[in-house]
Length: 104
Image (cartoon, rainbow, N blue to C red; front, side):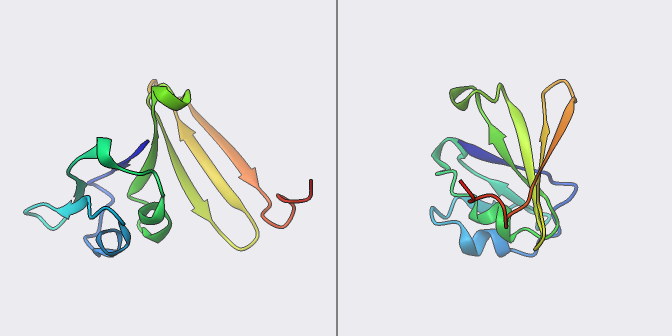
């Protein structure tokens, strides 16, 4: 499991650096975040939750059946949206009502 950082969307706020438990996220010379060793990422998603610029996606690798897709998460009080973009550009959107998600 790992993350993918979109350099175009990164605003260089450094919030992802401060929450990464493995200190894996660094800044490049232009002040944009990047992950130095993606294979060492724990997949905790702290950086994704903290990034308000939506510059960080969760990388869905082959090991978990994602075939290299990327998932972007948008969390709001009334719904959570997962946007999964496959390697061919096909996108799927899943909306979850957090108030109803644990009713089972």
